[in-house]
Length: 328
Ligand SMILES: Cc1cc2nc3c(=O)[nH]c(=O)nc-3n(C[C@H](O)[C@H](O)[C@H](O)COP(=O)(O)OP(=O)(O)OC[C@H]3O[C@@H](n4cnc5c(N)ncnc54)[C@H](O)[C@@H]3O)c2cc1C
Image (cartoon, rainbow, N blue to C red; front, side, top):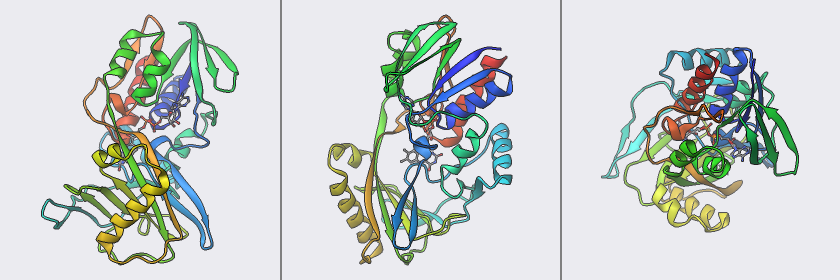
């Protein structure tokens, strides 16, 4: 039995941790977030009509791999995941709405982070713990946290964070992994979070935009399973627009994205919530990678969507395959 420290308890870190724990290894997960989610987070905002839930990162996921399907089926039984039976469209270059394919789409319940919360059960990640650096060597790694605390020793370390953060953590310890991470570019995404006391009169629940100067995706929570509280809308801005406005204030962006929604949906009522969230590293530009990386000499591995493709299922597969390979 070996001990593994996993930095990052998003879906890839948890998938890796589960595979290692199932094989009898000791696993210690730490995440800088205050709670489960990573890029599948759900933000809750108090309103006079109850809490508004915003899935401000991933909107849904699909499942194609049999191992992932098995995991999702178990979480569905526990009520952590359900199918989203919405109407999905895309707006083409001529401004016409076309229906999107009918591959089943799933969401976490009661918010998107329900999936990550379900996966974390039994693994007990330490939340609110940002790793600042590592020190040591294979067989005796220590993690240094932002708080000044040091934990260890661990036999091996897994880095399950976005590529840009991998190179910061691992540059001094593993050239093969940090150089690959440095070559990756993630695109940003501004997300507008808007809630009303009643649903808007839209013919769809989620729309993608092929050629809009501002908009990438708009999603409504109204038809997502298990959601309560006010009608919420998440407006994801186009990556190029997000990059051009990256350092603007969240207040300014929330106004711009509210106006973009109004242009599409017609005059809007006064919102209960109008906010914005900046995803600095939202989705990797390139979608093909080796799946995961492992530096055997150093006992350091890396997993995440930057190695497998910018989708929830791909991120899970990256962690799962790394965990399985290290257990073998
Ligand atoms: C706006 C947006 C929309 C998306 N839409 C979809 C969609 O509709 N469908 C889909 O399939 N996918 C979508 N995705 C992609 C999907 O969310 C990601 O591919 C997936 O969640 C990545 O998981 P991960 O575990 O690789 O990374 P993350 O979820 O980013 O997890 C990494 C974790 O590491 C933690 N961390 C980082 N640095 C440190 C540190 N120093 N110390 C400790 N912890 C640290 C973070 O807090 C985080 O929890 C979307 C993503 C975004 C941002």
